[in-house]
Amino acid sequence: MRKEKSAGRWALGGVLSTLVIALLPGFALSQEGGAGEVTFTRDIAPLFQQNCEACHQPGQIGPMSLITYDQVRPWAPMIREKVITQEMPPYHYDTNIGIQELKEDKRLSPEEIATIVAWVDQGAPMGDPADMPPPVAWPDPAEWKFAEMFGQPDLIVPAKPIDIPAAGQDLWWEPLVEVPLAEDRWLKAIEVKPSVPGRRVVHHANTTLYLPGVDGELEGQGGRYTEYASGKLGEIIPDGAGRLLPANSFVRWSIHIFPNGEAIEGEVTELGFWFHPEGYEPQYVQDLANYRMDGDLDIPPHGTAMVTGYHSWDHPVRIDSFQPHMHLRGVASSLEIFYPETGEREVVSMISNWNAEWQLSHIYEDHVAPLVPAGAVMVVTQWYDNTVDNPHNPDPDVWVYRGSRTGDEMSHSWIAVTHLDQEGYERIKAEREAMTPVAQAGGDG
Image (cartoon, helix red, strand yellow):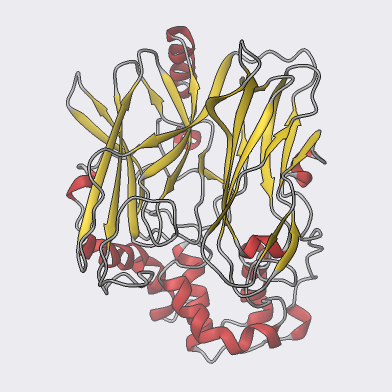
């Protein structure tokens, strides 16, 4: 993994320039004329099928369909702008810092961005219709995302239905729902799924485990099943690890809803579980926890802020995923590891172009997921911009404080951690060191 100086030294004003510099090699392809004529049917349609159509099709969250040439052509100038700034596809993660091998990574390469830019600059020609690839047979938008990988969920726990008005303030829907499970099961994957219209208004949905206490009263266990947010795939527990779904448990839903102009009757958000076979016993337990930032988060009008959180363990761990959470003034987040014995500070992940509309979980490929020795410190930093320079800022003239409303701010990250023992830590480390150089490319964890 690439070593960098502390992300805390980053200046917010340098974020966009760093992004442009990262893309320059790709743009050289079109500027030097090496790309030749670029057409929709031959060059652009395959890129859109792979990276855009999943959202930009009827019934999905994208505001327009981008399947046919006639649908795409009017949006060509906007598409050019969105891919240059890496706002689309909406996977906000720096391309030149930290671990780059991520599961379900939707980023375009610099070469792919250059191809789209060249196509628009050439007048967005259609090309030969015979070059058009066959249409993709996309699944029903109401289908589970994990169905293609794991089949249908083994268990579905729906929230109670709620009617959502067309207009109004933030809503929180927090029903307690029993999990119909008679025996403990180890989980392989977890996904939260609002209805198709509900995806436009469900800001996030937390699902927390509750169990009966000694007196029979239900008690929260502190852990999350998952934290749904726009664009998030779900939770995939790595091989050898596991999360336990206890029998006779309950789900406390906490669904944050923001009306967007269209009333929805009977919205039901569902929680899907995929199980390992009966008798499966994981080597190690994984959990998903909320790691909070320290310090005040009081952002003055036309001001900025930075907060940092620290956490260490008395045993080695593997960090499996990183999901920052902020609201509209959030602009950047980093994950680092500090090694007290050497004084090194290693940047694991950096998101410099963060967008509150896409609260994504970055899942590391198994062979590069960060291995953290006992006593090392995980450092999470988040930056906020309450000025007119932040395009997502609804009002730079107000003070912004911590809170749950969309107009407030938050400062935490959802991080999945597998808890190892020293033997397991040394074994995984040795397995990685024995890998071929090609397999190791992208980080040594």
